Image 1 (cartoon, helix red, strand yellow):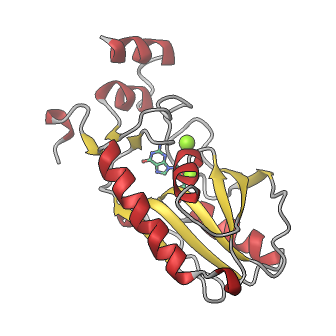
Image 2: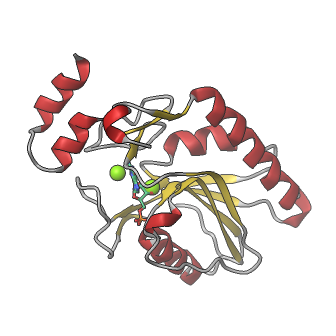
Length: 204
Ligand code: 5GP
Ligand code: MG
Ligand code: MG
């Protein structure tokens, strides 16, 4: 895909996302029966908020839903390799099956850190359900816990993407589809534009 010729290339439409989220929900329901201790869904804030909301509405099991925050990016686009957890779980996950819900797995730093953290709270299994996975950028291998499984919506090409929860500098999370960050954003990433400038450019 040539970014020059696809300035605002939509990778997944609202309909495609909705269809895939339903498929992921069905997979999860098959793996977790109510007798089998219904899982705790943990969304990684903020990026997973739309995916988590759409996913859990399709799970007809007595689940709990919570958020955790891991900050590794700040306002930039590259994980700094050492995520902090400024916002921790409210739900007690001791002895529970946890499903960590992510927008996108990139280097793997965030998940690796969160899995260690949740494991230390005594979760009996830890699964990961991510809408997107960018395998080309993986730096850190993470291990699921117990009988945890890896659920993934789509493989993402190696571009910075925005929409459906994913931001650039806290903007564009509310787009209902996922697109490659446009030229203006790429210029801003290179540090050549101030944020107000690229917002205005994008509206033109
Ligand atoms: P990791 O720690 O795996 O490198 O990064 C994980 C987090 O970085 C993701 O959960 C997501 O919030 C953010 N991230 C990674 N790649 C992208 C991307 O292409 N676009 C956006 N908006 N965020 C990303
Ligand atoms: Mg995320
Ligand atoms: Mg972000």
